[in-house]
Image (cartoon, rainbow, N blue to C red; front, side, top):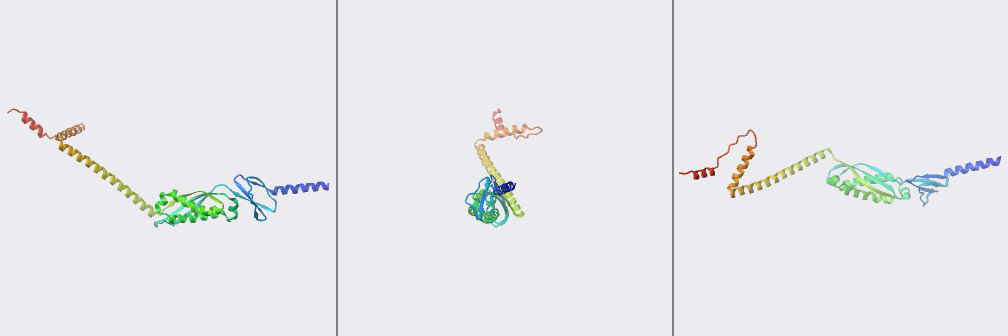
Length: 252
């Protein structure tokens, strides 16, 4: 009977030991094993991982892409305009050992680097670049963040500037500038039309001067156009040439 109790106790101890030594690593995770405080070089992949109780400690690292919003940063552009810019950074862990060993909290560190890099980009850029040249600024910001991130085992997927907030006075000034620009374009187009019309009228006048009969044809066409309108009274001057013709045709 005593032997049975001993066997049952030993079996229970072994089961408890096995339960405490088994860990499950998810598909999107990697496991780092610390043995007496020293990390093992072999990274545990997804599945069931076994460790030595008390001796080993398993730390899981998420390998998914992290979407980290960068809080809006106030800054002054190169052309002395105060703006507030926010962005978003997409990154993931490429080296779990470096991400855990070389930096205390890689997410917090990435957030601080992103904020300081965004402030630097604001100071180096003009307002027009922030508003219209986003792709180039995104690439520059990605390079600035990627430099320290590589040492921490972090891979930058993409960086995007989300919004550029301007002061109300600057918005009104830009609105007036855009309105003035549209007015200038409208006047230029109108002036070009007047110039083209004047050139055509000058050419028509020259043609009529060279051929007086063309003026009579134009007069008749005008009469036809006016006669097509209802309730209109037409006063037509009698051509002098017709009087001369009749005078020559009348016998003395």
